[in-house]
Image (cartoon, rainbow over the protein chains, first blue to last red):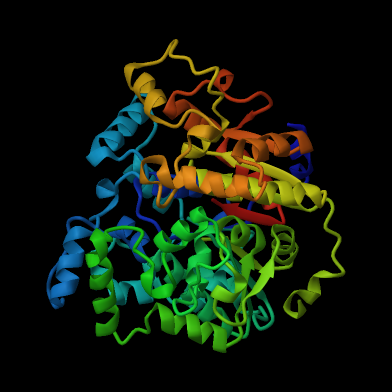
Length: 170
Length: 170
Length: 170
C-alpha cells in the first residue's frame, strides 16, 4: 500500500491511543472497542474515557441499584441503556430489528460480539475511566459499573490525552 | 493512577486544544464546553471551530434576523435551534422531557448549565470561530451570532489544528 | 487573527490528515470531504478510512449486487444508503425535506454538492480505504464500491493514523 509507506520505520509498541467515548450506540461502542483491541494487539497503551452516554457501556446489568438516588436519577437509570447488550444502533435500529440483523451478520462471520470485545479489551489491559462529572450528574455509582473502572476528571482526561499519539472523540 | 503516570513531567500550560464542533446537540455541546473550561483552567489555549449545526450554539436568540435572506434561509433559520438553550439532546430527548430531566439533575448537583459553560469559556479566553462555508450555506449572518466570534475558512481551521496538541471532532 | 499567529512558521505541505469516517449522514460526509478538499489544496496528504456506515459513501449505486450474499446481507444492502446521493441528514432530515432544503441552499451559493466534493477529493489524490471487518460483516464486496478504494484492517488504519498530524473520527 504505497500511500502508507512512511509508517514502516515506526516503533508502534508503547504508543498511546486515547478514546473519549461519549456515545452509547452499539455500533459506535463496537468501533471504539475494535480500535482498542487492534491497538492492544500491537502493544499500544489504550485509555478509554467514558463520559455521558458512554458510561452506559460500563454499567454492570447485575449491579443496577436505585438506593440513595433522587427520583430523577432513578428514572434516568431505568431509561438509559443498562450495559453493553442494551446499547441501540445509531442508524436503522428499527426498534431493535436492525441491531438483531447486524448481530446475526456478525455471528455469520464468526465475529466476536460487543461484550466479547469489551472483555477482551479489559483482559488485554485497556484502561477504562468514568468521567466524574457525568457519574455525578447521571446519578451512577462507581459500584454499579464493571470492575476495574477508575474515576477521572475532565482535567485528568486532558492531561492524559496530551501524551497520546491518537486522540478520538467517539 | 498508575497508567497515567507518564504525564507528570509535562508542561500543560500553553498546550492547545482544537475542537471542531459539528453537532448542535445539548449534550455534545456540553461535552465540548466542559473540555474547553477544563483546558482553560489549566492555562491551555482553546480554539473552537463551529461548523454546520455547531453554528447553532453561537446563535444569539435576541439577534435572529430574516432580512436579506432567501425563503430557504428564512425557513432554515426558524427550524434550526436558536442558541444554546434550544439545543436538543442527542438521545432520549423525548420531545424535550429527557433534556429537562438532565437539566434538573444538573441543577441538583449545582452544576452550571450550558449557557454558563459557554459564557465561562468566553470569559476565560476560549476562541470561538464560525465556519465561513457553513455561514454562507445556512444563511446565517455574523451579526446574528454571539459577540467575539470570528469567521474562519476550513483551510484556516486545518492550519490551526495542525499546531494543536489535542484535536477532536464533536 | 491573533490567536492563530503561531501557525505562520509551519510547513503545511506534506502534513497528513487522517479521517475515520464512521457515519453515513450527508452532512457529516460533507464535513469530511470539505476538510479533505481543503487539505488537498494545501498539498496535505489525505487518508480517509471508511468503516461501518461510512462505507455507504463509497457504494457505487450502479454496481449494487445481491450475488453470493446471505439473506441478511441482501436485506441490509437494500436498506443501507446506496452511495453519496442517498445519505440522509443527521438532523432535520424530515424524510428528505430538510436535506432537499440544504441542497437548494448549497445550489443558491454555487457550492459543489456531496458527489462533486467526493470526485474532487479523488481527483486531487485523497486515498479512500474500506475497513475490512466492516466489509465482511455488512456483506459488501469491494467490487460494489467506487474504483480506487483499497481494503485496510483496523491495525493498518491505526499504523497510518499514528503518523498523521490531524486525526478525526467523524
